[in-house]
Image (cartoon, rainbow, N blue to C red; front, side):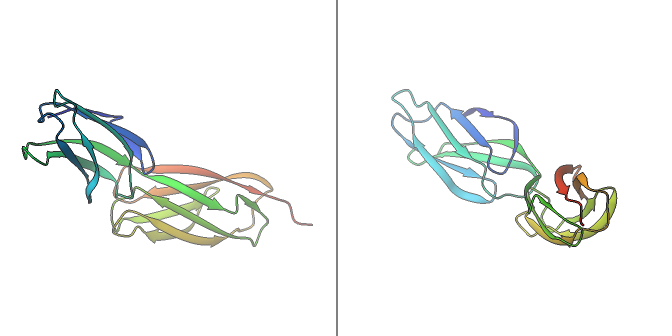
Length: 171
């Protein structure tokens, strides 16, 4: 059975470790993760114990199943963890009024409506795709020079993620 999944929550790209026992000695254990069948595999030791570390691949927000299946014994055990949203890029990270900015993220509910605030103003919205990813573009509006926020607000999941952008003054 799966004895532990750590951490219990994370964003796409987070390292997670799955440990388990009760499998046959030197048995290959397949690990399925959310939408990904056969995310990875590991061979148990002489006591039927295993440990495997891997990264969270592209998955939508929510409780995600981790399933360990012995390839000889067919013993199957399920545990879970919470995948959370993430802003993966704000490009460029700085610019002037009129600059075009691209914001990308993942870990949102599939097809979820997402609102983007720049500073404290709603500047655009988009929808996540079926894997919980999004890409949105906007033009820097008139605001004071200095650091401002790029805020991504989900319509369904309880997520509100903030990144930063630096506005250079125009001469």
